[in-house]
Length: 490
Image (cartoon, rainbow, N blue to C red; front, side, top):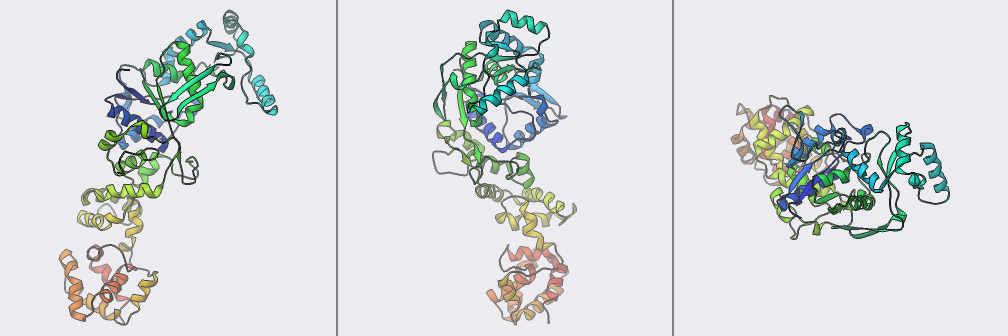
């Protein structure tokens, strides 16, 4: 087969879907594992669904995920779309302008594997209604199959509207050998003479994808299993052209916990959603690789290098992979824990600013301490605001029953007074003060253990459990702590 060549070929209809990212990832992993080439091609033949800026968004999402490719569509330093590689153009509408599809559909017409269809939309709608009423699968009845090529060309010259359809043989088995799904056999009696060229002159996906994949030397077609029903038509097109078909790999659908396909209404489906919520690219990619695939060992934390080393299609599941948010959070939290405090602080800062907890001038030392304090409890960056909000409020509301119990104890006023004395002996709270203050209060009051730490934590945070108390004291600072203690002094 020579060098393996794989491609990811999305349509520019909006954001990159999480399922699309997994498809791109599996293509990328297999290409890199086999020293092959990975290509990004844009399939924009359906101009009615084209979204401005979608190509740029797709490229940026792949770049964010660390999925690089060798040929295709790129952005230059100014953000302009450019193409690199020997098999271009890599955008289908540009290939259409060059007349590539017209050349190949003419070959099919000449060989008798395709024909002009002049049926009106009204006739086709009427035909479908009748077939449905009779309990039949709606499909074209082949009325125009008998129109000779000579007559068809004359009618085209006279200005009749038409499409070009594939002419399937009758009662013929078409075999698809899929690396994941196995051998699939479909008879042409259960298939339709699909449209290859639409009335606007643009190729359909089914035609363009076969021509493009062949001309670009694609050896493996890796895509979602929603394309499986169309694959026999693609296989037959390869046969009609006399081309060798590539290896097909249809991936299981990404499902939600209810085992239903992820939907925009009920689930986060866009890669942008996960970026906005503060998932690390390493965390999302690591987890996504495991949705429908498993390595030979039991490892679940795999960076890109190890994913490439481990990946094979033999271990891809035949059934849908469940997208489990809890599992994603667990994987992502692993990568957050491995960040140094300064880098984590930089990631957290925009979320804290957005939620009006800090401004751009918040001291970097405090930001680093904040990052260190909450590092072990974060699943994603956006969680920082909810977890750290108590540090930025003027007053703390005590809602936990255990916390209420501790602050109602008789010695709480004594602890608050002792803490206040310690605070008044310094100009500001620094790390040294924060480390020693609880020991000093213990010496002063004789109160120790839970009876010391739990009430103090409850007075300062409203909770009896939470982040390191030493860090909380330093982050709150003198003024805020004094305000909180005052309400507990009788």
